[in-house]
Image (cartoon, rainbow, N blue to C red; front, side, top):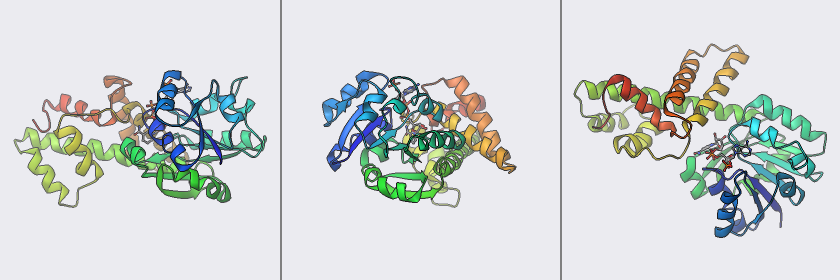
Length: 297
Ligand code: NDP
């Protein structure tokens, strides 16, 4: 039985980690705020490590799922850090939606210690994590990705090798830019229709049977905006972070990307207005406030 360490039991990390014991893996968990790890250990078979080093010392594969690559890199160093515990031949699978440059730097540092690295951001949200149906986009050596595939399949349905280290991060960032653009554009369109006196429920039904539909219009708007539920599943602050990665990538590649740049600016402003705990779909509230209308009212 392989021993897996899972570090970072946030909104998406906890429901991902909970599948591992049922798949026959020996699970060790660590979270900065220990209470979250203790809570998970009460519902699934898992041991709680006191430090990242302790978690790595006993594991063949370490999975991280933190806000950004910076927190992952910070977790490596120091007496209690991952580097102090890694076994030779171990693998770090980073499920953070990270930035490719930092992932490459982490991979190079680990390689010197005989530890492999895969960037493996996920998509599918909290519900996908709970149901074990996430898409996992992997960057790294093909043989290493194959080696960890049985572990990733505990929470992922589509596990795709996208290329070298950083490729998973890059595909994820572009996906997130598309998500943000869909949210903003759908919000703008429906706010305009609402203000012009058109019933937005009827309008959304028409759009969802027409060529302008998207996952955002088909699922996010009916379930979260028209219902006014706005559940907090994925923080706006994290989508802002993803957009910065996408905008930087386009700039570095010399690709003019005015839509991505603008989306990055809009979501940065929305984050400043709504705060660190707001959900990503709540960006629509900024459109509503500036338009002076409530979608679905
Ligand atoms: P959350 O904000 O819910 O959780 C963040 C986790 O990281 C917590 O466990 C937190 O610990 C830990 N953490 C934060 N800062 C540090 C630090 N400096 N050192 C150690 N641990 C730290 O984030 P999510 O779970 O939503 O997201 C995690 C990653 O997954 C992000 O990259 C996100 O973009 C991505 N993602 C999220 C999705 C979602 O639906 N939520 C969907 C797809 C991808 P503590 O408990 O102590 O705060």
